Image 1 (cartoon, helix red, strand yellow):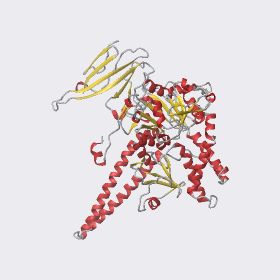
Image 2: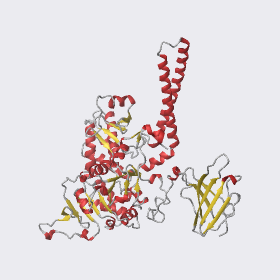
Image 3: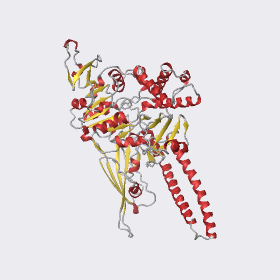
Image 4: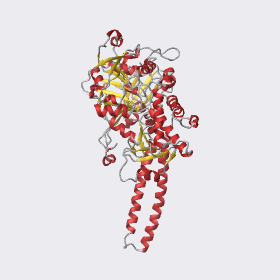
Amino acid sequence: MPPVECLQKQGVSGSIRGLQLVLVLDIPRLTGKWLFNAKMRIAKGRSLSLCVSLFSSPSPSTSSTSFSSRILHFHSRGFSSPISDQVPGRRKVDCSRESSHNQLYTSNIMDSKTMQFEKTSSSEGDKHPCVWSSPEGGRKIDIGKQIFCNRSLNMRNIVAVGFDMDYTLAQYKPETFESLAYEGTVKKLVNDLGYPIELLEWSFDWTYMVRGLVLDKKRGNILKMDRHKYVKVAYHGFRELSKEDKVATYGSALTRDSFDEPEYALIDTLFSLAEAYLFAQLVDFKDNNPGKIPADYSRMYKDVRAAVDLCHRDGTLKKMVAKDPKRYINEDSSIIPMLKMLRDSGRATFLVTNSLWDYTNIVMNFLCGPREVDGCSALNFDWLKYFDVVITGSAKPSFFHDENRANLFEVDPESGMLLNTDNGTPMPQVDSSLRLPLKSLEKSCQVFQGGNVGHLHKLLSIESSSQVLYVGDHIYGDILRSKKVLGWRTMLVVPELEKEVRLLWTLRDTRKKLQLLRSERDHIEDEIHHLKWYLRFDGVNVVNKEELLAELAKVQSRQEQVRLTHQQAQRECHQKFHKVWGQLLKTGYQNSRFAHQVERFACLYTSQVTNLSLYSPDKYYRPSEDFMPHEFDILAL
């Protein structure tokens, strides 16, 4: 390999050893722009990384030496940076004018704030997804795929990782699945519960509702509140309530409302979005068509819930999904590599779902089974090899109570028959000739139905509940009970998070502007209070009083302008996240009620379950530092 020929030879020294190049640049000795041309030949398909160290020699006025480093990446033709074109602040530099075969990329390794937003090299549809354990793994992770930590969690202490299925491993498509649930519920309301036939003409907007809302059954209102349970956004059906109406309804009582069942309904799962939208439609219809629905708001919600239960009970929804899983469930090629990596690391894996065996087998075959030519998967039991224990029909959240006396049945995968068991061991039948052979015992994975968490602990030989990490999507059904009752470590899947954090990054300058406007409003208010206070005293002469009054009018006018500017900027920022409900995890400057639940009960949270595959199975997750208001301006970086 020829030596490096630099255009700016002065102040530059370098050496090449194999595929390593070190350049040391003394800044004061360099003249003009810092540019150099590296001429070298790199074998096709090979790459070369350089570390360029820049230092400034001590000048007579200072004895200190400044230092910074840059990483330079060379690659043969066809190389493209996975991050240079996607992250603000990245610079892609082609320093070779004589040849397009080699390209030079530079990135500041000191810029940690930008580094955290780097993209992973694998695309969403990659047939060979990039996982941590692969040769391409261990790279910086896109902000939308990161796992965020509320409480320290050392994965070395975890011996078993468990998963929910619906909306965790299986991510349903809202535009098809939620629409299917909505249409089924409407038909049940009309045909079984006697609601007006006009409902059959209604349509469903799957983008309208979000998680974390609270339904006021008595008043027909839908609320979004902050972590202190103050109502910030409220709608009666689809009509927004004014600030005065909100205060009169929810802020003028002598005692605070708890906003809990049975007077309120909590929309904390993606399954509930369709019923919340239907409830809002019914409220509007009742208000605009007196007498057509004799039931009050509370009764209407009860009927909606009854119709939803009827859809699930008669199997309408699951039959449609089972018939064409690809239409209703997102494919994810990272699930199998994730499960393999966890098992290869020595950890047990288990599945606990409320769905019964027949439906579970269809969904998991679609997610983990081999694909046929038409894109569908053949129905078999190969996916069981990725788990140690599968429990279906678990009836969460009651499953998490050890005192729950639900019987545990072993499932024969081929016939679907249930075989009675006692604490995880087979129980002989009265007539042994009727007992089928336990084919599942020949497999590494056993399939069960029912039972409770005590059965699961014995099956997996769990000695301490803190050795279990459970991943789910339902804050109450999966996370709250398993964390609060058992002390399991928990990870919440929040699919909406990926879009939200990307938008937060895009709007970071807008957020700074809002902070400045809020600070300006506070400053103006203090100035007005001071002028009004001074005018109260008798010692102020007439001339000074007129001047103070003129100044007060001027400041008050500026206050109104800043207030309107601030409110408009807030609303625009709010609507960029969601036109109606705004940011999922915020209400104004406070964390939302949903965010508060996430913070309290989820040790980790992330946008997709397969984001686990991007991290070491032995990673030590550590939370960011907490700040009290008195610390923030002093300590926050």
